[in-house]
Image (cartoon, rainbow, N blue to C red):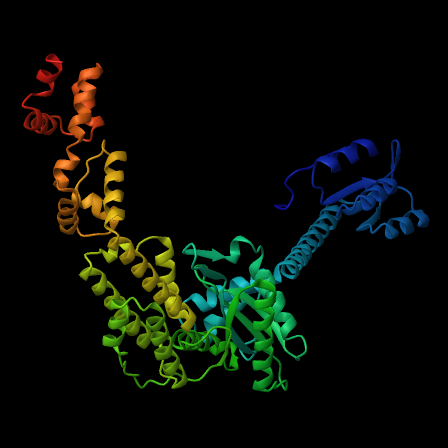
Length: 514
């Protein structure tokens, strides 16, 4: 009997109980009469401890009460001695079969309980994997996936996808920082799901699953299962989405957009989702709106640039308000004509960026140095998501540009910044290029400007480090190569050359003469 791996023996109830406590016992073969108690008492204890054990009793007593008690305690079998070996073997084999059936049933129950407990997470994982995968499954493969993941769907089940685009952040213009409500709001996804369920609670619509289909974005997908004969008017879908948007603004302080997709069977839902996602990407509009999916018009919308000469004039005259208003008017007009899509917006953004960068270059300002850092990167990345986002990005470019142009026009400010930096970083290898990173001006312009304002070349001013080296040579016993490093000349030979050029002495000679 391959099933039997271990055999244990006990002389009384106490020994038997200890064996049960330390081991998993599937089959018990016991006499009814035994020392320190009966086999029926042992079985009663086994049942009270919830052990799943098949009990076979062998006895010399043909007492009906014994048999009745054994049946009450769910004994597997009850036999009178003497019993033939072949018959005992057959009895044990039957007990083994019952154990195996019982184990299979237990596993089924366990799987069922696991499924009920984790149904939501399993469904979420299924949809994330199914919608993310670029491969379109055949019906046969899809059926296999459903069976493998224990999904209780049929290919004919119909779903309505609603794409939810959240904007859980704001840009604080005063300190030029991104403020994310994620830092203040815990369980955002859970609360978002709760709110959409509440928004649709008055409709006969069942939310089947709610997933964040891209972990790097704030995009979610609500999948509603639509039962046969339950045709909710499109107007009610829109009303529920609008109710959801208002609630999210009020309770989560987040803007949001909803895109309602068409009814789709399970076999077509992946393609429907891809088309809906593409539709949302191309639909550039204001935040806090609900959109109804329409097949994208394949006709290319030609980009018509705004009045760039007028915008350039506003920059030159530092007319920030007119510049921003003109950009907003241009975008709003396109929205009203349904002519603002992703490509048009990106072309417009490129023109505005180039216009501002060119204007800064005329002022000798390095735009690529001025516009860098996490805040700028986030605003740039988010800019194609809505009219508000592209306007936030443009306003940021204009504000930073005008503020820095005003700063550079103050000659004292630039000179003080350069001199303070040299004083604080004299021990480093300071060059025109390193200074350009600090004041965002071209290296050549810095050199010309510094000479004009200070009456001394930037190179010679930087050489004040030699004066510090002279002090260290005269008043300390530091090795010369250490002094060379301290004043920013990592190359000892170069330091010696510069020092001699300025003092007519090598560092060694200078120290001997002081």
